[in-house]
Length: 244
Image (cartoon, rainbow, N blue to C red; front, side, top):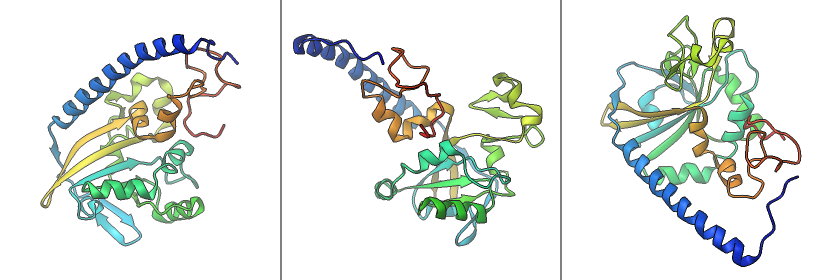
């Protein structure tokens, strides 16, 4: 393994102070970007999406649980699968009850939504020992409309605001329907519900804990794309399922 260069404490401190200036710039840039995110317009939801949860059939407004904001994690779970996506599973495993409680203090609910029927979701949820809110959108247009189920037979397939065809031939034709991850945010104003934001692909990793902790360490994420090369004890792909 190619470890960091050894230096004196004074040399390390000088390099760390230089890096701090860049970190501060990034923090300020992130704050500015978050401001622009909050300044985005919003779109009213005029379709009556239906979901199935432990309490029976509910609408999108019900997922707010009486709060003003809603974060929906689009958990990849095709109706034909017996278990959920391993990468989505890794992300869900890091969403503790404490996180849900802290969001609730700020008038925000977080739920998971998958296209698999509820009995499959409930079996998998029990297997994982989870208590997080998780609803089935089976039979609904919800996943297609928010571009996490790609199927040209339903809607022109797009992902992360690009046509699916732009990603190559594996995203089209026989590969569809295709489940993809994402996260969507909604705001409730009385009885009206608005879509305010969605993020996909690597954008969603900003809400996952392990990667951002690893980014602080000398060995990093230990994946094959990172620089400097050679920091991993064995080659790992950028598949965020933490299976190795």
